[in-house]
Amino acid sequence: MTIGDAGQAFTLRLAERMSRLGTESAFEVLVRARALEAQGKSVIHLEIGEPDFDTPPHIVEAAVEALRAGHTHYTPAAGLPELREAIAREISRTRGIEVGPERVVVTPGGKPIMFFTILALAGEGDEVIYPDPGFPIYESVIRFAGARPVPLRLREEHGFAFDPDELRSLVSARTRLVIVNSPHNPTGAVIGREALAELARLAQERDFLVLSDEIYSRILYEGEFVSVASFPGMLDRTIILDGFSKTYAMTGWRLGFGVMPPALAEHVTRLAVNCHSCVAGFVQLAGIAALTGPQDAVAHMVAEFRRRRDAIVNGLNSLPGVRCLRPAGAFYVFPNVTGLGRDAQAIARDLLEHAGVAVLAGPGFGRGGEGYLRFSYANSLENILEAVERLRRLIETRYR
Image (tube, rainbow, N blue to C red; front, side, top):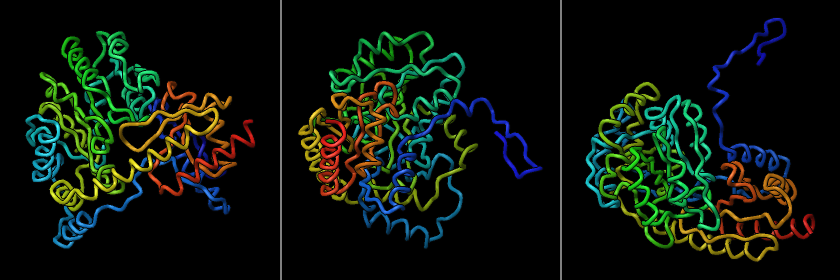
C-alpha cells in the first residue's frame, strides 16, 4: 500500500496478521445507506443491531451524578469492586450458580471479552469451533490469533440450533474453545437445555472450554434462557460474555463484562491493562444503577420487540418466495430468500438501492448464511411494516 504526497510516497508495510482480520458488514451497509440519505433518498434502517430506545433516565442520571462527583480518573483494570460485586450477584441469581467478583472482568463493551478470551486460549495450531451463521467477529478474531476457525453449521431445519452430533464430529485433539451464542445473532434462535447438556458433557469429556455469548439473554419471548455455565462441572470451563448494550439500550456507553475462572480472569485483566487500561468510572457507576435500579424499561422494551417480531415475521411470510422462522429471542429475523431466485448479496443490494431498505446479506455471517437476509427489527412498527411493503413491491417489479 503506497501512501504520502507525490515525491514523498512510501510503502506502508502491514503485519501479515492484519490480512486475517475481518469486519462487520453492518457498518459498511450503514455507510452506504447514509450516503443514499444524503442524496435525498428515504431509507429504513434494519441493518444495525442496536435498540432504538433511549437509555433509561435513572441510568443516565447516575452517570451525571458520578461525573459531578469527580469519577473521572483511572479505575482498577478489572473494574470497580462494587460493579464486579453487583455483576456477580446478578449472574448468580439469573444463572443459578455461585459466582464471586474474582470471576468478573469489566470491559469497554462485550467484544474485548471475545477478543481477550480467544487470544489467551488459542494460538498457532489450535482450533476454535464457532457458530455458522454467527457474529462475524468470532471467525475474525480466531484467525487473527493464528488459530484455525472450525465452523459449526446452524441449520434452518433444526431451528438454527446446533446439532450435538455434528458438534461432536468437529471436536479434535486441537480444540481449545467452542463458542455458542444464545439468543443468537443473526437468527434469534435459543439453544435448548438438552443441546447445552450435551455440550457440557462433551466439554468435560474432550477437555475444552466454552465461550458463551449471552449478550441477548434478557431479550427472550418464549421458552427459557439456560446458560451452559449452570451445568455441573461447567462453571470453571465457561466464559460468560454479557453486557449492558442490548438489555439497557447502552450501546454507546461501551460497558460489557466477562465471567470466567479466576485463573483466566488474571490473564484477561493483564490483556486489559495492555489494551485499554480501564473502563471509565462514571460509566461503571451507571452500570450499577442499571443492575440494581428499576427494570420496567427492560420489560417494556422486550414487550415492544415481541410486537414488532410478530409483525415482521407475519409480513415476511406473506411474501412470495420468502419464508421466515419465528425467533424466540434477540431482535433479528433471518428469512430464507432462496425462492426469489437471486443470491442474498444481490437481493440486499437491490433492497437498499431500489427500495430504500437497509438489511444485511446472510453470507456476512458465514457460509451458512447464503440464501438468507438479516433484518433487525429495532425500529418502529410503522417503519417495519413499510419495509415489508417495499420488499413486496421490489419482488413484484424486479423478481417476477
